[in-house]
Structures are given as structure tokens and as C-alpha cells.
Amino acid sequence: MGRGLARFVDSVPVIDVHEHHMPEPVPGLGLLQVLEASYAGWTRARPYPLPQEPPVNPGSTTDRPGTWAEIASFVVGSGTNAAVRNLVRALCQLYGVADITEANHQKLDREIRRRNADPSWSAEVMSRAGIHTAISDPYADPLLDVRQALGERYRSVLRINPLAFGWHPEARDHNGNNGRALLGRLGLAPASFEEYLEALPLVLDRLPELNKVGLKNALAYDRSVDFDPPDLPVARQAWDRPDPPPQAKKAFGDCVVDRLCRLAGERDLPVQMHLGSALIRGSRPLKAAGLIERHPRTRFLLMHLAWPWSGELLGMAFVYRNIWIDLTWSWLLSPTRFRNAFREAVEVLPDESRMMLGGDSWHAEEAYGAIRGARELIAGLLDQMVREGAFLRRDAERLAVKILHDNARAFFKL
Ligand SMILES: [Zn+2]
Image 1 (cartoon, helix red, strand yellow):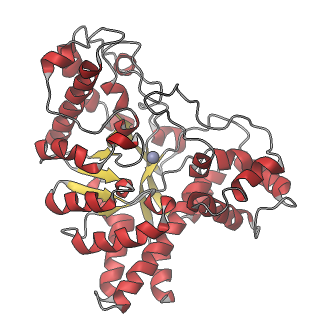
Image 2: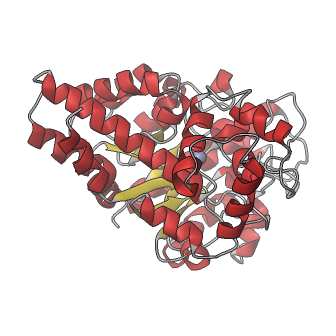
Image 3: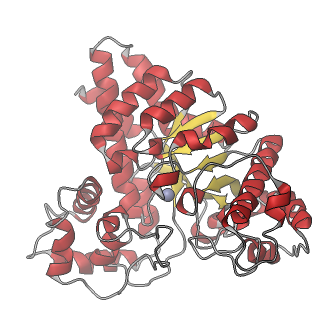
């Protein structure tokens, strides 16, 4: 690869549009915990339930140092998995080791704990990754002001899943959150379905004071993304019932999502939406096409290249001009598919404003690995396209700056 372009891409500061950074819920972050609370952890267990499964309790199960058998189950048993490889490489770079082995894992664990006991370590790692602004989705507490909690580098989005689960105080999204509880914290106590819908703009009014710059629809983890046009009579049937019929629950969520997308369009507030994987029978991008067509004024940032349906997503982005593409996570899932999908995206997207990226991590170490990986892949792919004569080196540099920084600044009006 042309070292010049790689060095250039390495030097571009990143506006990272998607993380899950929240105040650390578990003190004592060691090697095992870093592996578990990351996409490497997804190799052990899927941290969300399918429709017929009981709720799961994701995250670390212990705060003690891992045994070699536990560490080896990641670095040997899943050592060729892309997410594991990416995180192991980041840990090796950050902690100055060549590999994670039976001989050094305890020392590495002690070093991770020592560095993470210092509150400034995570900021140092984010700075070393060149991440100058990060937008977090603190799903454990959707109303959290992440900027106040974690520092000036951060903004956040409001995850709307709880609001789609507000027909009864006992309704819960897959993170255990409820819409009425969320409204209650903002001093709102709707007494009817109509009042509930009327409370939604009042929630959006509060976003600026919480340093929230958009909405995040992660309902692909709770239900299908076929958000149908509002059917108020059916949705109303769910109100105040602990266990309404499935079609009433769906209609309730459809009405809430549709209303929020309309309000976001009126306010020019971006809407991030998870597509692909999750509840895989319902997460194909085209299932969300109706919602996107009904809200042409709403700016949707569709996430993860909708892996594994990147071609379908790019087809939609070619047709609908209210779609932007968040590359986050896609290269951690499969660098191979990313290489093809990225080149295809460069070719078909209507203009250079459309792509952004983020780390999608729970810890700074994983964000460091993700952003480093993205820089390398993107520099390599753009360099290859320059060498093939697709465009000039100056075009590659301009596009890289837009993907890593400028597009996100404009899209989120930072
Ligand atoms: Zn995420």
C-alpha cells in the first residue's frame, strides 16, 4: 500500500458516531472482563434473547482475574474470529505485548486493572485512537447525559426502544426499560394513549439539555423492523393491558416510531437505526423501507452496513435520498465483506456526504482497535482504487476526511 495515504488516513481526527460508553458499572476491569464486555464476548453467548428465549443478563459475570482456560477460550478457541483478532491486536498494541499467552495473561490482566483504575486512562486511549468526538448510545440509561458523565469528548443519542414499550408500566424492551418510566423521569404521566403520543414531542424538547444529538432506533433487537403506517385503533387496544395481543403491541410500537420519525423530520433531528443481524428474521433493511418512504424529510443513519445485507442497504441508499450509511461494526464482523461493500458504497452513493463510522464498543480499548482497523482498511481500499485509476489520490484523501470526520460533523450539526 502507498504508505503516504495510510499515514494521511492515520492523521485524520475521527468523529465517532456510535459507541456504548457509559459510566463503568463493574469496578475491576481486567483481561477477562475486557474480552467479555466486547464483540469478542459475543463469541461466547448472544447477549440478547430471541423471541422464544428467556431474558439474558449480558456483560461480565465476575470481576476476578480469568483463568488461562477462560482466556484461552477466546484467544485460542475463537482466536481466528475477526472481532477477537481485532481486540487482541488492540490490547497487544496498547499494553506492549506481542501476543496473549499462558505465560503473560496474568501480568497483562494486572496491567489492564492498574491502567483502568486511573480515571484518565480511557480518555488517553480514546485520544491515541484519534477520536476527538464520540456519540454514545447509553442504553442502560437512555436519558443519561454522557457528556456530563464522561467528559467533553462525548455526546449521545436517545434510544427510543423503551418508548415503543410503553403500553403498560410492566412492558419492557430487551434492555429492561419501559416508556412510562422514562416519561415519568421527565415529569410526564400520560393517562391515555393519546396523551402518551402527545408526550413524545415534549421528550424531544429535552434532548438539547441532555447533550443528545439524535434518536437511536435499536428495535431490531426487540421486534421486526417492518414499522407499518399508524393504526391508532389497534394500538389503543394495548393501552394499560399487561399482556395485549401481539398485533396491538406491534401497532403501539409502529405508532410511536412513526410519530417520532415525523417529529424528528420536523426538527431536523437525525435518526440512527440498527439494521441486520439482531432478531435476524425481522431485520432485513427492505423491511424498513416503508418507514423511510413515509418520512422523506427525516434523515436516517442506517447502521452496520445492515450486515449481512449490505447490497440491499446500498440499493436503498441509491434510491432514497434521506439515507446515510454508518459503517460501524461491519468491518469487525467481516473485513472481507467490508472490503467489497465499501468499494460498492463509494461507487453507488449519490454523493460523498453519506458515510460515517464509529467504534461500537463498551470500552476505550475496543474503540481503539475498531477505529485503528477502520483506518487501515479504508486507507488500503482507497489506495487500491487510486492505483486502479478509479480516481486521484487527492480524491481519496478528500473522501477519507469526510468519512472519518466531516460527514458526521455536518450530519449531527456538531
Ligand atoms: Zn451498538
